[in-house]
Image (cartoon, rainbow, N blue to C red; front, side, top):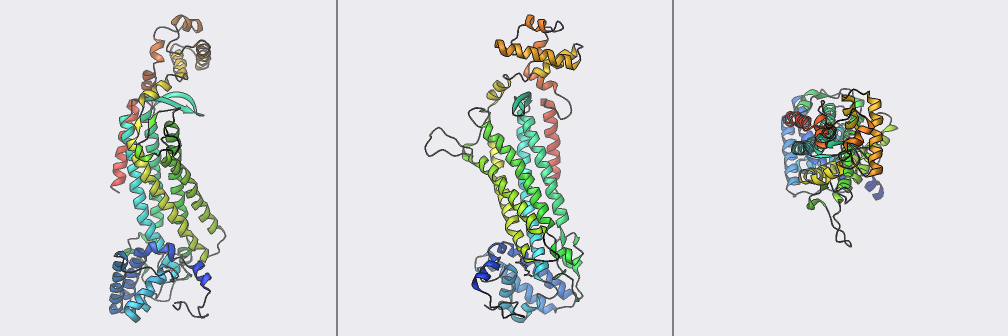
Length: 462
Ligand code: ARG
């Protein structure tokens, strides 16, 4: 097939160069956006008197038939087309004749690809957003339900203080709520139309960019023509937001892997999201969680790859920019797939509260509470801290816990200690006492869950 851009050269490129140059293998997924963008363009051209109403009608009818045929599988993408834009235009012209040749007036593939990508990503961001909302909501449900489940909280991966599993779940819900905010910020900045910037410098035709932007559901126009065709910040911003989502998912998955090990045994993953071993019959492997953790590297790679492609590009369009799509598509697909695994894993995980409590009973995670108790008896915190530390050391050497250490021993460390010390080191009481705003007490966890629920309800109605 002869190339549409035959002009200075005869267009006889080598077959290898054609394959190397072609993007239809991956940009064909934007066919609906490409066709929708072209229909709006034809509408604008006719409205501004640049083409006739008759030609515009032929173009939009032709485009509609192409869209239907592609959707119904009656038309295949031609791998010989350079990209989706060429394919649609070539198919249109073969169907409607000369009117099809007028469609590309007052635009270029440079503004067209920038348009298609924004339209396409706008749709995918909506899907991702819905999925993140589902995940955050799943965490909120678990937070509510587990608001009183005591477990060890860790710092440095050492048992630190008792927390509730609900608090842990609400922590993840909070992260994913912020992720929704990042997606929204990115969508807002992305939602400006580049079409009409043409190759790089605008056009001499009396176009109406604002009208065309309105038809396509944009909030406005990306004004500067050189910026409009060469801006890929929106890809970078989206990739950054997606990388943060993956970072959060990866931290979660690391915990799921640890918690579901024999050593912890805090949770059991739903069997549908685990695998067996081909040789060890006892295994229940957390493959999905591990894969999410692994795929995080891939999404970071997509971000770094795109930043690197862009860093040396002079204005305006350069063909290097064709590389943006595979990265951003890969990241979008990966994040959606990972969220699709994470939601049912969180909703379906079995909480082994007995194992959590047993672990919380070891490791002296109530040592701070003993110190706080001594402060309530009038000691300065530093002194109280030291006494509590000596009591812990004694317990370790003599196989006691702070719950089982006899009162006379306690008194030998500090005569201010009374019978009420046992209440002070009781795990449920320690947890309930951490009732400061956002603390781990069941009351605070329930309050957080209620607040998050309200926030999420507001976000889903956006
Ligand atoms: N396939 C190209 C891309 O993805 C479309 C734009 C081509 N523009 C050009 N002047 N060759 O970037």
